Image 1 (cartoon, rainbow, N blue to C red):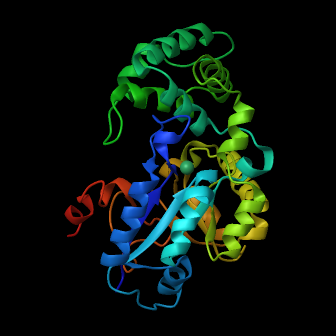
Image 2: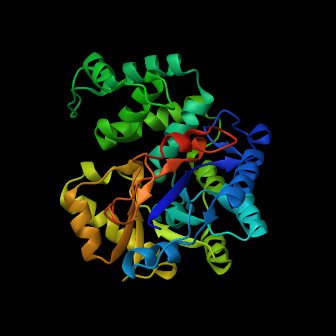
Length: 319
Ligand SMILES: [Zn+2]
């Protein structure tokens, strides 16, 4: 069999009892139900089995499914690891190098927590005002309404206002402007310092080590969680090589696995990671992977919201 379902997770936690119940995550009780469902209807495989399937043409079991967790959150250790152990299955955890080495908050998380703490319409107004304030002061970017028109496009998870905030503060505005605006909005809405949140949000190096010792797979998710496909080649290479250096203890440098932040990559990224020893790469394309036809460095994934108890969407994707 060459078909592989790959399920993607981000925050998994006891949402009701957490400090930010509005954060877009999967509640741990639903996660448990989902793993029960998957144990019954799929064969949950390890990353090593997938690598063997690609490199040595060893068949995967029927209905093979791989569990992937992005961004290196401490909730993966608190809530996910015990359940995976209980069911005797492996998870693959993709950890941005910056999170556990510098304890600085990534842009992606700054924006998630601002969105979880603010009214999105009020937030859009604040953001637009800030964009107008910095434009022309040594920074240049298109008029705010033009950017709104271009980027405020809803997707299957978010309304257009939410997407606008994410795009502006995660990639579109110049990095310095993004940082200044998101720090200001973070301070206004979130209620803790960025440093406090970074320390409670991310896995520590010891936790990563423990997860690996317990049979979990550790993979690469960039250093600074940039949109790699939008970077200049030199900056892209620097980010990936820093990611490899920080994760050196946890990965096989001749056989590591990439997961593109935001699913963003291009031909130069593919060439570079191949040259650096990547053997698999995970995107955010929404399909069931077919190892015979898909490029091993561009494997599609489904979201955890595509499986019960959240939805039955995984069924619609079977050709
Ligand atoms: Zn990510």
